[in-house]
Image (cartoon, rainbow, N blue to C red; front, side):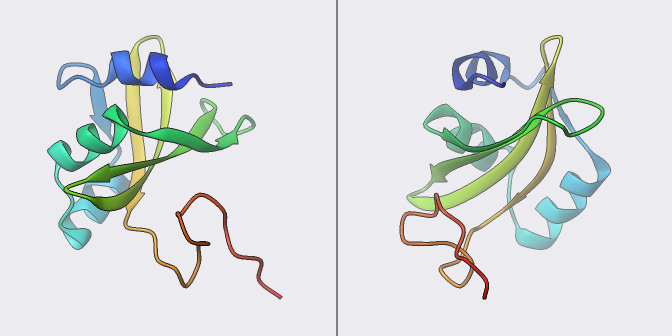
Length: 104
């Protein structure tokens, strides 16, 4: 399981790597590195994906400029891999953006 304190320590410009997918989504969604770093700094892990490959990953909820931001990332040997990021909506998430809405 990933630990939020380890993630926060690894969140530096020198140790953060963005996947191609993350870079594309950041451009499309106008999300900057500073937004991701800010959301990780005050973030909480809301989901763990222990079976993800090549490394276990997690979903973090944080805030940047008082706006919610979800960041999916993994951590391996001190390198923080940002997989994707997006602004959660109430259409898919319960109030507070920590719990997915049940689709029936």
